[in-house]
Amino acid sequence: MTQTDTYVPGLEGVIAAQTRLSRVDGLRGELVIGGFPLEEVAAQATFEEMVYLLWHDALPTAGQLEAFRDQLAELRTLPAATLALLREAATSQTDPMDALHMGASTLNLGVTDQAGNRRLALRAIAAFPTIVAAYWQLRNGQTPIQPNAELGHAANYLYMLFGEEPQPARVRGLETYLNTVVDHGLNASTFAARVIIATRSDMISAMVGGVGALKGPLHGGAPGPALDMVFAIGSPDKAEPYIRQKLDRGERLMGFGHRIYKVRDPRADVLSAAAEQFYQAAGDMGLYELARHVEKIAVDLLAEYKPGRNLQTNVEFYTALLLHGLGFPTQIFTPTFAIARVGGWTAHCFEQDRLIRPNSVYIGAEGRTWQPLDQRINTAHNLHTP
Ligand code: ACO
Image (tube, rainbow, N blue to C red):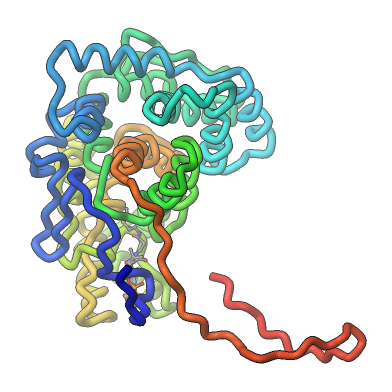
């Protein structure tokens, strides 16, 4: 065993896995997924093809794709217990990401040990959109819409959310988004999923852990607040004073900065192009142009306030714009991210074959002696809770 005494906060720069799924080059701003440059594959593949590529390291033939789509279709419908739980969650207007977390954890219901992780992985991928859409309907006082076996994965999600068969352009827009964020090296939620599966826990537990990690605003929770900022700014002349005030208060700008990318996140380019096409087709470029302006001011001001940090636009800024253009409410931006990333989480779990168990450096007290309760004085420190 190799042992090192060096403490690396946040494991920054530490290599903790080998993967053939995606290569992230943070200095060049490159992302390769399953051997394809992101720009080559994101706007062409269906989501089913993307997941198949990650799972099998090759694109499917027509027959393989059809079989994969059929397997997903079979597992899309939710167990009654899942729906009952979502119905309960809707009565208290639970956050959609929490509802996904709860719903996902029920996907083990009635599953025997023999089901195997591959079947559970399929079940998670198939059911995540149904959970999110059903929950959204319930939260809005509507009856969940059953999946339509004739539609593909992305089209089904739109259908269950909005209640009508989507136009091909909307399906393409959503598919481009899902493909763009399906996998991204050893990001926080993927790492969480790998840690869980590495203990030989089950696939659903690993997916639920991934959802928990993705929820945070430093990871997948950023696009809602990023769009809120653009709306709050409202017009180009207000961008600079608004962002200056935020930075003066020491706040972070959601949708900017990245642990790995020190140049513009390549996913931002793909999503910005998809969003531009979409807003152009819809005949209203106002929000898109405002967002471009806000982005420029934000990047300039981040360089001024945080010199040397190279804080650039990340994927979340244009996620927000594209999903908004597709008609998604901000509350389900992050669950939609999970619907994509579950493809990557499952594939990473198949790769993980060793227990993950790093070390910590003890910095606490030593040699204390026990004191009876009536002799203690309060010397407790508050633990830092982030
Ligand atoms: N706005 C303002 N300041 C920022 C931002 C930001 N978006 N991002 C980083 N900084 C500052 C930090 O305050 C810190 O400044 P300091 O050294 O003066 O204290 C410095 O830049 C370095 O920040 P770290 O937190 O050490 O950088 P890290 O690599 O850990 O952070 C992260 C990466 C979490 C993504 C960060 O850039 C951030 O919080 N961004 C906003 C949230 C966001 O957009 N998240 C989505 C990321 S993409 C994804 O996960 C899919």
